[in-house]
Length: 275
Ligand code: SAM
Image (cartoon, rainbow, N blue to C red; front, side):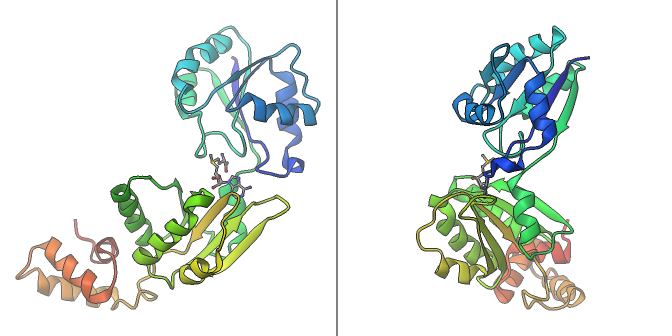
């Protein structure tokens, strides 16, 4: 059975590539990569000869149209490697639709694990790494962003966000408004590269510190905790809620509590567990 290999590549430091990644790229005859020019640096650096290989681009906009070609190679019995510009394919990168179709076609899909920015950032953040939620990039549309931020603000798990430098300050400011500026955050930048940096503190402190954002960022946001939000005990809050819903509908009651305690509606919902 032919195999699609999902090959993780370095997120900055080329020394982070795995032996298996190099071997896989040397052995396959077909490679699909996000940007053929970017990946050619990697191939040159690791002496991966493209002489007997077919290399094709596969990125967000052309992923669907490239699927039949990749399936044709696999159907013909050849293995294919998929790599993105950096890190692990499918993680805020193309490949998901391809994997779906390759599995439907009863081919193998094998991961060649390696770097991914979210895990590198999480483990150095100093924030609870035991349970976490990966958001990736927030939506661009203001109303959708707000909804996602409200969701993250009330999550009882650490959240991980990817962000571009030109939006980092805006994102921190919006997170500050929704989560409160005293929520802990780690702002990690340029991981594995020469200018790797980590800021660990509150959202408010981060906003003051970041002046001219440059490079690639991962944000690690502390989970919601009722105690830190200075909300009453969950049982007390539920009691207040139950009293309120005698006169108000549940939505209004949650709104009242959210205003009273400076918490988001989602945070209140998550405590009173309104269905
Ligand atoms: N597939 C990649 C992975 O496994 O992490 C992510 C690709 S996504 C298009 C690019 C985003 O990942 C960047 O905008 C940034 O948020 C994050 N990222 C990638 N490399 C990074 C690095 N060296 N330092 C910090 N963040 C990085």
